[in-house]
Length: 383
Ligand code: AMP
Ligand code: ZN
Ligand code: ZN
Image (cartoon, rainbow, N blue to C red):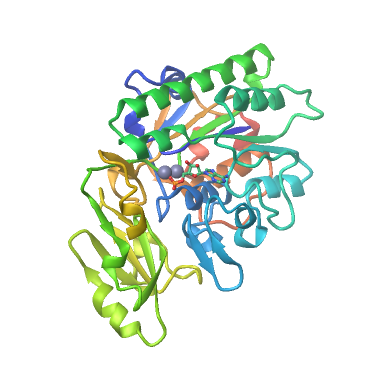
């Protein structure tokens, strides 16, 4: 089976002329009205939720940027941290598969560059934004076209292009539409390669995104140092989910300036966050968490001058915001045809993946029943 991630793609981006290949897979296979991301609606937390079925609060990737008392600092381009299995709790699908003696291959998936439980995919690659799209397609099509003896049982492919274009120019930009056309063409090419190799009918394809995207008008940015004086609280997470660690002896001062409702955001003690976010117990979640309102960014003052003018895009807002909705499409021999299912939470994807790969799922927060209805009754995966 092949798991495809289109970073930042919202359901409203599909079916409007830019994505004929993805739309065809959705029509011929299964599609969800939408998929609700987990909190926070950021890239690393949600990619790792998709492959573990665990909420970020349980799998430990609680933000793209984190502090851990023993491990230090985590951020996306910190290769040492991203590749260190101690950050990544739980059991990603490829680890379960490898333990069961099945081979796996990733290009690239957050967590797959790390030795989780001491195990990596049989074939894995460092994330490289410079790797051209055709090369990505060629590598993954090549893996899936190998003879059964070496063909991976589970593979991933990842495209960051829609997310990058929408961040820089906004979700309604031509640049986003161009990026959608690019990744859609890549999926078309991948399908054609699998067809030519005679393996398309043996390949289950699940296409997901990690979150959607909201428009951020030019002036809708605040400075984190203005939220709380750095002498009173250290900022440990920025963006849309902003985390503060009060300085020693300043807890009360930090709480009095931060907690509660503000014009563009609201802050809580970590133990008092809205229950529906299922967030706040992990030690890596800082004592005070602020959620920005949709359409607002919070950045360090040093980045303010460098921020390009114009409309931008962001995610990281409340997963219940319609703009944060993610996509789910499934196509292949195990799946029904022409089925649209209601919205569901992205923790439910992992039990489906485990079933498709043919392994016992590890303990998770998902509901295996949610996606059971998407499988053909006669498919081996349905039993
Ligand atoms: P964000 O929009 O901040 O939530 O993160 C999206 C960005 O994460 C993408 O544009 C990529 O540049 C980056 N990214 C995605 N996968 C990886 C990875 N496996 N390792 C490092 N960075 C990644
Ligand atoms: Zn993302
Ligand atoms: Zn993003």
